[in-house]
Amino acid sequence: MTQAYDQVDGLCKPALSMATNIGHGDIQAGKRRIAELVDSGDEGFRMPFNLLKRCEDDSSRLAYINEITQDISYGIYSLGSYTFQGKSCKGYITKTQATIDGLRTVGHSLIGMGVCNDQVVDKGVFHPVNNPSGVKAGDFYKNTLAYDGEIPINWLFKGKVYPFTTEAPTADPLATTPTHEESTETVAGKFVISSYNDFSNHHKVALNNKVIEKCNGRSCSEEYFSINVEKAFDVNGATVLFMGYGDGGTACNATYGFFTIRKDGTYESSDELGNCTELEFGSIVQSDSKIILSLPSQEENSSKNDVWTYENGKVTGSVQVLKP
Image (cartoon, rainbow, N blue to C red; front, side):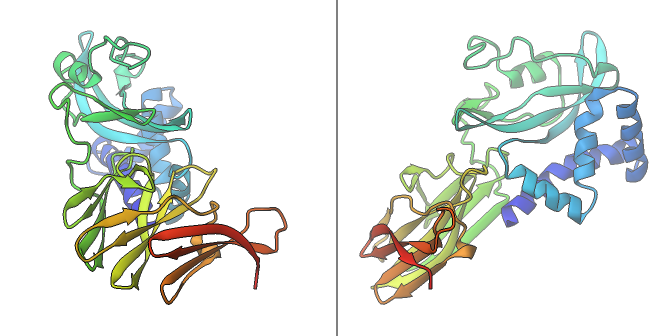
């Protein structure tokens, strides 16, 4: 949940900054002016207007947190000025997230406001399917339009990262300051999960600064919307981390797995387990060298729990047992 709050803060700040600028330091005046522009038909201000409503108060932000964990969400990446067809324009680069064919896509586009609100500037830019020979959008924004706002480094299409500019074609999408970091002490040192709020929700999982590539057999950095340590156990001199993973959609709220970390720094990740039920509705307990996960069955009107057992680095289950 902390990551979601951080993400909403990151989305609200550009919209609030825009309102402050338009209101010449008076944020409320700026909000009123943006609302007037939308009412007059200026669609370039539609997204900032919607964002400002979502960022209005705590209850609005909480609703927005619930919204961004669904399959589609959007926000403002940066604000800036540019020139197009002889016009001096104000605009912003969007960041829109969606799931296409089951794979996460995070795109960016430049939207004009005011006299430039009806201009389509992205025609002809690179797309891996529709226009593979096109110029990279970031290059076009910077070199042709002279956009002076921040330009994304990468974008994501069906789970694959593409460079947004040629200045950093092999840039590490994680080479930015993390917006959330979780550290857990283990017998081999610190196990750190760093999350990067670039709307594709990249993560870096590392043990003593050595990056771990795979979590449950999937890419730790790109294939999960959220990663966190649910609980840590001491088992026969090893640290066993019970991990929670989220895909960001509504079809499956949560999956789980174990990381076994030994004193010599070696580790192993279990296969994915769970039945999409969140841990708060179940339990995980240690019994000597065993760790037992119990989650309510997803079967309709079931009186049973699905149970998995971890022992000596291996997971067995699921088996069904009657609820106590």
